Image (cartoon, rainbow, N blue to C red):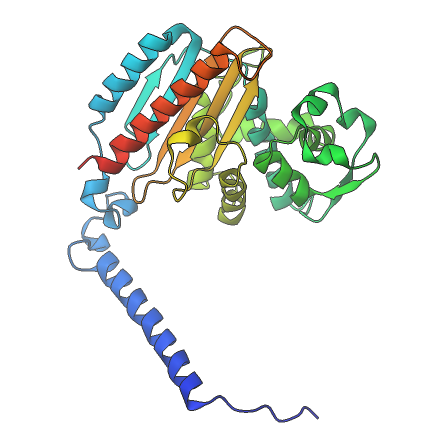
Amino acid sequence: MKENQPGKTTAERVVIALLICTNLVTAGFYFYELYSHDHDINAYPLIDVSRHIIPQENFIVNIQPLREELNRMSTEFGEGSLSLYVEFLNTGANISVGKDNYIWPVSLAKLPLAIAVMKKVETGEWTLANELVLLENDRNAKSGDSKDPLLEFPIGTRFTIEKLLEELLVNSDNTAYNILLRNMHNDDIEVVIEELGLEELFTPDGKVSAKEYSRIFRSLYTSSFLKRANSQMILTWLDASTFNDFLAQSVPENIPFPHKYGENLSLGVYADSGIVYVPGRPYMISVMIKMPGTGTPNSTETARAREFMRQVSGAAYTYFSAVK
């Protein structure tokens, strides 16, 4: 027989009762606001349901001042060498510069792979606990140059799918990318492209534009392809990215910024794309730059690219967080 368990004290019962009451009151206010008062969802059956819970001041339509500022910055930088896209997610108002400029995506290509892997988990073909083995070919010269965390492990080491995805998205680990890609089929990637309507994402030679790439983040934000738990998991890993030299420079640390970056100094490519979660006013931002390749992190070209990213990100954050 189980031993008699001591009963809860009066104080403990009071605390539990208060917590329950607090949660009930909070839920009551939420549903009152949602289904009655000035936001009666039944009174506006033809209106987007999100309109009932997002305050009017967070529906920003006029972004012309920001458009003019970003166009000016881009012209000064050199519009032919960059692709830029900003979209305010509450309204769809957007800014596109160099929309026809397609640039090699470098590590941005890792995000579609991660989504394809997660879809295999959803369908039950894989689980996050399944393990894949590290082979010699997974540790190529490209991985060696990037000092990936997984390079420290000996050949034959087995990693879970979850660990590989985390390293892929948090640290942009090329070894994790190679392991996952080697175990995927072309059809797995095609499912992502077809179901998200991304046929125009990559050109025949594998290049992308900032506007097309942003559609991947929109699919995660709306959870239109993956289940909410899995979209959330990917965005959480992207928010934990260890790279803060590009767009993240102008996003306060307390603001979530799930993003994927890419950098190849020898090709002169610098890219960053993600969602900035200004409270009540989230927006997507993607910047891709192609400059002469230098191969050095301290070159003038690299400094210009990083400064341009900082300025663009700062302008967007200031506008969306301050506009009334």
